[in-house]
Image (cartoon, rainbow over all chains, first blue to last red; front, top):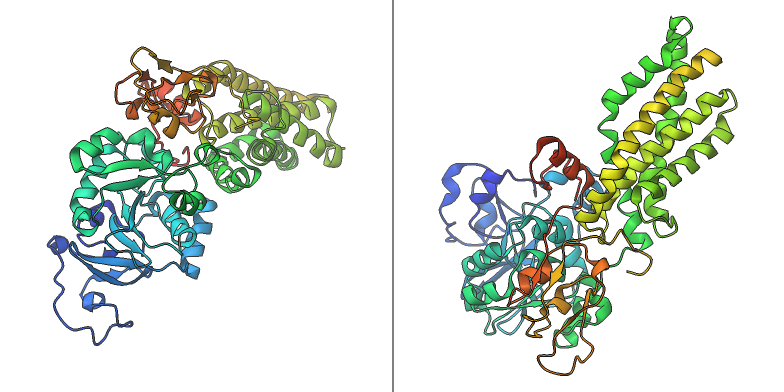
Length: 396
Length: 101
């Protein structure tokens, strides 16, 4: 129930509620009626209104001076977990969002902290489980289902959106302080001084990782230097691998036919049997390059000691292809083997270069500098390797 | 971020004359590019300590109350940059794959 079209999103006036259909729903929802038939005593009749469904993550409603605020269950359901897995393997990543607005974690009161986050449900679910012991107000911004860091870069996790949601949620009526806690990685999009001017709320940048929020709050909203520094641990890199792989899959639909056409070329002009057997070998070369660039490069990132990701990738790709050839490449001649190593390196170099966009430490200016040098090399070596592959058919 | 050094070129510029020592850049920078040795002293200016670590996110610049810092924030996504080379547009995350960031 988290998939909504952008049109529907604009029509949801109440947080925690998905409007399933109808453009008549733009008026605020009425709340009259009893609660005799709701599944839980705290649920109002809102579950019964035609065309509307409450998120399963809403466990009840909290009456506040700013109206009813949905209470969020800290327990992730099987659906939530399935959603997280889908995101990690790159399925449906364009529309995994929850409705923006004010939510309650635990049993917050007028003294509770207010934290601000994005409406990417993966992030929201991570907060739900990580902060399950805290009583907090959570203002969810409309970042179009994008995570905090990327949305801050795009400006959707931005000054204007913070101001809009703070004003619309009437959080100033709900709490008696004027402090907002934003994730530090939202700072590229938000001007703290402008938010203060427009809303009266002072922006505090909390830690980078949700796991540190409790310690940060316990210390009186003070972050240690390590809470402020981006990391890129083995685990953080490993979870990115499935999406890296899924990104490599999309060009295959036109690459694979090309592989088989090229592989069939030989002394007999074009041989279907060579197309199949040699095409499969060429595909495996490509596969080895993908494995090097999308799997081994992220895993071995700090140990591939070159600074350029293209070089890191090329090394990983050459290594994987070489190992593959030693294990399975007995039937290939020297030119074919050499061509596959060069192809694997070129593919892995390109995939590696693309991984810069996923890391938290590469500046765009540096990435562009690397690309100016390496994209021509990647195209050139890939073309050479394919030429070598076709040539290999004639010396076999 | 020990062990993660990249090419180190970026557009970060810091005008120490304008700095009022509020320390906001120290707070928002995910790579501790700025430091302040005399941290206890109120209003002590910060130092641009590790400029090569800057990844051009722009958090310091947008949160600096006196505009002492400038940096051109951008998209560090190779396919977005490729797209911008081909189309001549500014690189953005709005690529079709949706996976660049």
